[in-house]
View 1: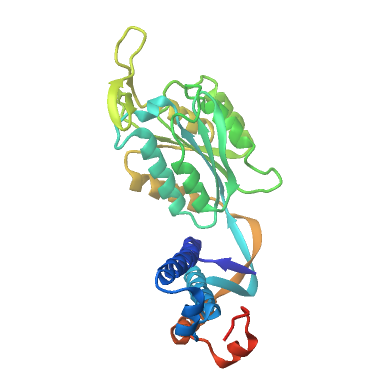
View 2: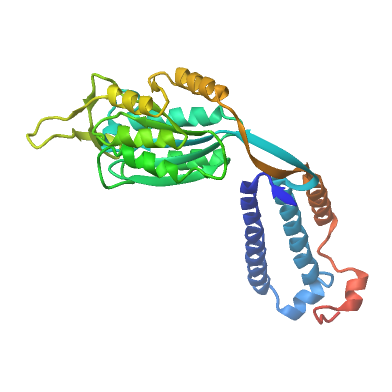
Length: 345
């Protein structure tokens, strides 16, 4: 069992074809330059000890040196010890509103970016809980299934935007129904759905669906992003505001945070509503809620104790570099006897 710590350093292997290309260009230039002064037979008499093989060998050794140094930077690790680790926690699904109203900038930098910050900080404070992500607007869309891979969760989260779903609206009820498919009925973990939204333009069926979810053991917590006073929805191109969204009468649309809706949904599913204006306060409250919930063992995996192996490749890299320094392009006695390139002496 092995793993590679810094895979980005594999790009350093790109220097090897550069070395080979430079060598070929140099040989071609040398051949052209020498032919201007003497023919092939005369050159052999002038430089009887010049070896083509030794030149090729030096390039091969130098390439091996850079290959070893690149692999040393990657730092391959080999597993030396296996142990069973039991994990326990809560299954948490984040449902993030990606409707156009989330572009309003009544909370900095805007509602959607604020939502991403909140979810990211909550994930950063988790220990062994599993997380999943849902995106919703007029429809709900599964973004990431339940996982313990927090890095992937944050990567998918950052890729969310208001253009990923064409249908507009705030279908909280569809997000709640979709979240039910995330939880495994065979595993008796505590189930939490955290909805991050401005609560505007929601379906009237949301409360009823929330009650049904509560009956299935899902607790729903809602986080409101935005300002109750509201703000316009900017229409941008290349980051520049061109206009603000208008209604059919040509009036600028003002979107407002609807806290009452979010409170009703949370209350219907044995949860609480949290105002999302203060990130630190939200994270602390979510942490306290999760700490009071029973943790159920949901996973037992074998993890290996890995040890660094970069030192071997570093040693070989230095060895090949030194060998290249002391390796001359002149012929040696045993090479003359082998006569690998059928050279006439």
